[in-house]
Image (cartoon, rainbow over all chains, first blue to last red; front, side, top):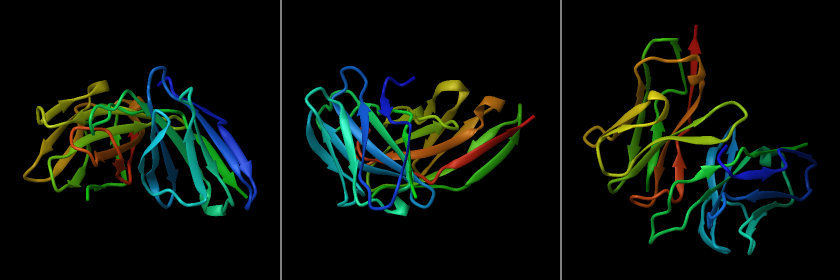
Length: 116
Length: 115
């Protein structure tokens, strides 16, 4: 158990809908990362937050957004869902970033999103 | 830009025989490299990391990897496979030297272990 929790474990929804995925980092970790794992794209970094602020962006679509709250939990919002958004979404957390280099990322079990 | 290429999408071995999972990287500077493992229906777990210290890196569960700059490789090995090693393995590079930021994942190698 990595200490990172994600809810829900599974989510089934329809095209055009909006969903919110939630992540609670390990106790004390200030950085949260979101990843998407799909069959055609593999594992891709989406976005990183550090202590409430966006720190780095990867291949995140404009229909997707994220935020990190004062209690450090994070939410990934996916809107106008398409069939191709079906994937496993992972959250990871790491301890305080020192300079440019972040510490080891610990991954949650993921949320499996199915868009019908 | 950094990238990693995992040369085999599937590897099948017998229990008790050696494991070799191949990874080549591309980087404009000395990279930070990692191997992660993903067991079915589980999250990713760090096996080992290379961050410019010793070139032979030992990880958990008997795995090790050797950083070879001349060959731009970071192959993962284990002397004797166990049934519990069956999983997907990802070779990963960080865009930030010495750090774990903005991880770039390879396509993965699925390891099957037969009795």
